[in-house]
Length: 118
Image (cartoon, rainbow, N blue to C red):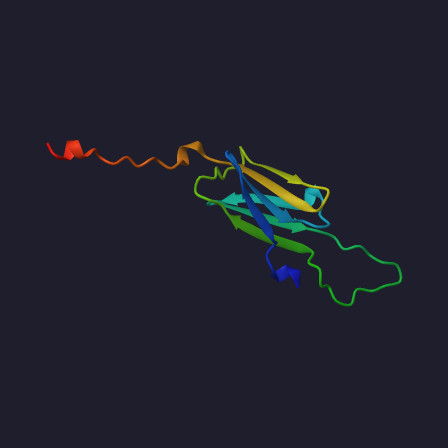
């Protein structure tokens, strides 16, 4: 059952941000929770099953509560102030997280051989 499997996601990167795209079928915006914790974005979705006249539910195979998380690279600015989340019409949740400019890698410079000879 889906309640026991984490949500699928893709992690994409641009020059200045990361984009995490979660599958979010059958969900409304008010039923989505997005949290940030230690370079991880956590998502919880509540969705509702449609009822069908004349039919009873025999096996609940599609999850009602879905959750997932994505670990982000160290240079992701994992705070809610710069991030945004969009629930798309095609059933995905897109969470954009900016890169933290302070976390850029430093260039390693080798000492000049002349300095070592002195």
